[in-house]
Length: 151
Length: 151
DNA sequence: TAGACAAAGGTCAGGAAAGGTCAAAGAAAA
DNA sequence: TTTTCTTTGACCTTTCCTGACCTTTGTCTA
Image (cartoon, rainbow over all chains, first blue to last red; front, side, top):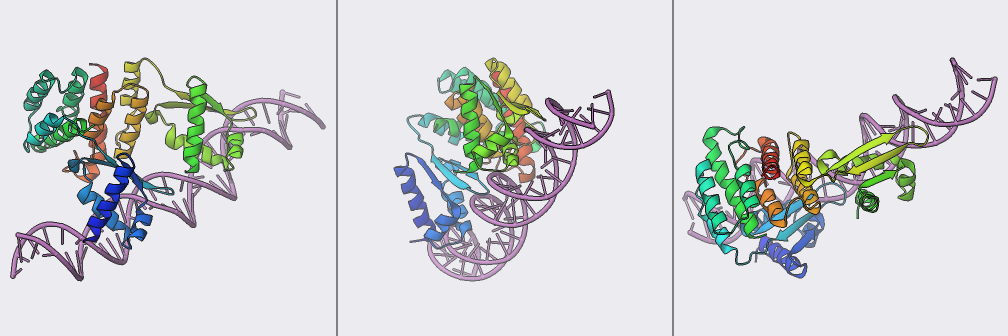
């Protein structure tokens, strides 16, 4: 079995026994598995991404750590579906339409809808080149909805 | 646990028991935790900034003090303050910290916090050049918080 | 009252302890 | 064989802690 999988399993077990939260130290984990520290980054980057339903925070410096949080997804699958269904590009109008749909399906509250729309409005993305804006908007929208779906 | 965190917690408790205001003396705090006085500055500079929702005043000379005030205004006002206080750049960790602050001040719901964080996560901004990411994140965060504040 | 001294808090730079990045080499899969 | 995934190591950035030195403010005395 590959080292990366072994490490990933280990983290997975930490998550289970830790109620969905695992806090590791890069160096000591690397020592435990006799690999270089950067391999830990690799494992996390390839197996504990937001797309996989995880959230990772880290802190550098003395006493630093890497915290991996499993985002529990319930029957909010519809939101996940919606998020996954968003294409590579999303206009502001489409975002508004989609948001209204989610709103009227009661998958979002009024405030959440507002927040979402503002976050990916042309205003927020003003400094982004217009050709990239819709792509970025799609990414933001997708990520936000996935995030909230698994909250 | 790190000294800085311990000290930060201590101040946090002073704030809670003091109705949002904590007044400390740099030297005696340093003595209590057996560290150098400048560490107190470090803790305050890194954890009780306006971005984190605090205001700091100090007075030198005999009878000097450092006063830390937790900003607990009317909720919308505080949200606006927070939005305005965001600098030109915002790291993912800072976004997480600020969101937690807003969350624990009950200015956001759990879901709103999650949505906000996801919307400006590195995941959502993956396609943005890294040099621009923190700037854009700041813009998104600011816009979203202002949007929700004035909703 | 001016000046000296004491009692605060402030700044800054440096070393150490993390974690992060990137590209190249190696291995496995297609 | 070509492509994709894994592993490694050199180098980078961030955070923490400390200590030397600076500035401001209060007080006491000549």
